[in-house]
Amino acid sequence: MKPVTLYDVAEYAGVSYQTVSRVVNQASHVSAKTREKVEAAMAQLNYIPNRVAQQLAGKQSLLIGVATSSLALHAPSQIVAAIKSRADQLGASVVVSMVERSSVEACKAAVHNLLAQRVSGLIINYPLDDEDAIAVEAACANVPALFLDVSDQTPINSIIFSHEDGTRLGVEHLIALVTSKSRC
Image 1 (tube, rainbow, N blue to C red):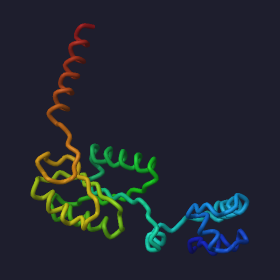
Image 2: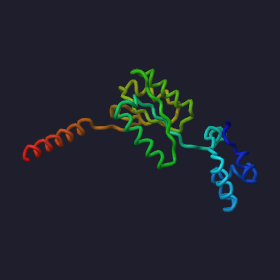
Image 3: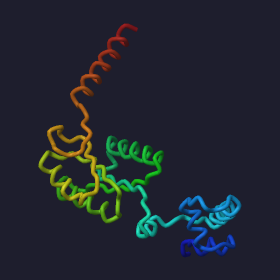
Image 4: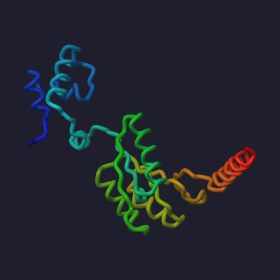
């Protein structure tokens, strides 16, 4: 079964396909009555806008690409879930490419996979040393990129996590749990 098109919605609603396009793109010069009729037709036909076609037509859509290590691992899957949650709140979509092998070339391949999907920005959630991070950033082809957990000495856009502080707080918390339990 082929996907429902703007033309299908237009025919169903009894309006022009340009009117349907205006409703999909949230143009202001559509009457409330016509907008309701088109939205009802879209719902009835289960119309889903073609984001790829919108991108080709020059419409800006926010698509964030995430290159990450295996989602079978707890930390990367939690980070991607948090990225997706926040992106949803901001009206952006997320596409994920897992780095299959442990190498800078595999990370670059994941980035290229995301760039082929015309992402608006990239988040690299993969451990890289300074030199490799710079090489991956060069592969980002002028698409804004944010690296997670690389050295704070690396001259790229990044978010740095303090493993030392996190470990210290974790050990302090564990000791507090143990000592309070032994008093019981």
